[in-house]
Image (cartoon, rainbow, N blue to C red; front, side, top):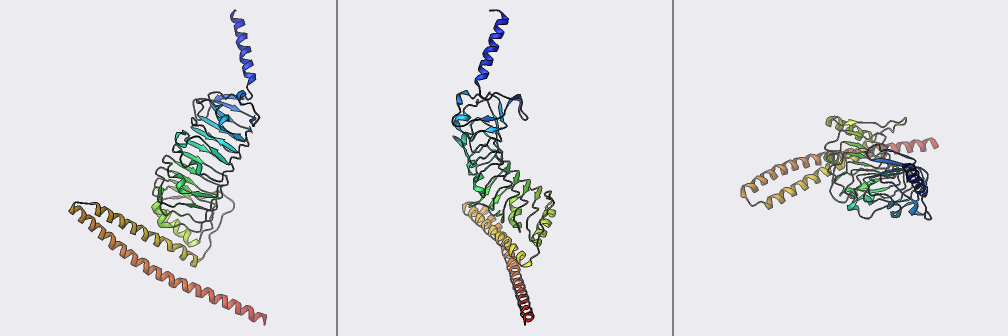
Length: 381
């Protein structure tokens, strides 16, 4: 067989093989963030009756731009090559997704995903997971994916989040839960996210941002705009965010006095205040009675923190066997105790002042209501 015949024979074989595959690559190019080749597929339809043995995904990065894959199951994922490290499935109406262990970058946005599964979280290699514009109601499935560095789940149906969900994610740098239905983030124990840099919680329904027991010492960017906050506990805020560089708390129904105090603290600490671009800006509201009530928890949390600090000192002293070291710790405890007693005395005096002020405001409001009622009755007669 001469070279010409051999060439035509190999070409015919290749065309026959290609014709067998249901979805060949529409484009084969270089990926945006990788040196590996990227296969782009369009209008991919994989349903229960689809013959999976006819589906071939080449051993390159995959980007499925459109189609209908209601269940991106284990069987579908197994059609991928272990050499495929990056997967993007968008606009495919996917409701359930299986993440293969060999994947490192996963983009499953603009679908209808409500369920995510995998064989073992500990064996997953995914470092970047994007689940935007889906139907997720719960994010707890990520709790043991220790490889995660970037997690985004914008525009889902998440209404409840527990900080403890992220306690094992020691590599997590970015957490973005923008545009969900979150009202409160709970935490039952002290928690640290040691390397987290960006925390984005904008456009939710958060009414109370409880930071008690939470340490985010490396967060540099924080966004909690477009929520329902009237105040933030400044003592907890300072203790939690120790490296903050920029913050956006705009478009919340702030108490004006609490907002002024917060802004003053950001100026003193050099934090850049950012404002979301919007034609409609939510204005703060003046209410002195409410401002006093919202300020009180700061003093309480401060005393609780100092009390726990003293317990730690006592524990350290008991463990010491060297008498000179125990005396040194006792002296240090005495200094802290003196400081705490002075702080407590100051707090009690302030609390008395606030209580008196509350009664004055209450009496003032009551008298105004009586006068208004009297005027109304007088006009009726």
